[in-house]
Length: 99
Image (cartoon, rainbow, N blue to C red):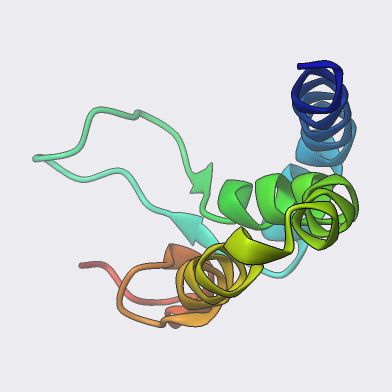
């Protein structure tokens, strides 16, 4: 049980620390979602928050996966898929994409 708690706490702390940085990077490089009639936000919103979560969780999750090696393949492949699949991650869409 202790390993799960450490993995959760480490992932949460890493994600919380990296989220403000990813917001700034999104604004600097123009990776933002623009407001429109059918959207709920009223100002440009950065679209790179998922990258902060992956970057914050990976240094903790990967050693945990090594410890539980029978789960490593499925977990790693799911993380890679969600991190790099262009259709699912707004950060990899064109900055001027209004969709």
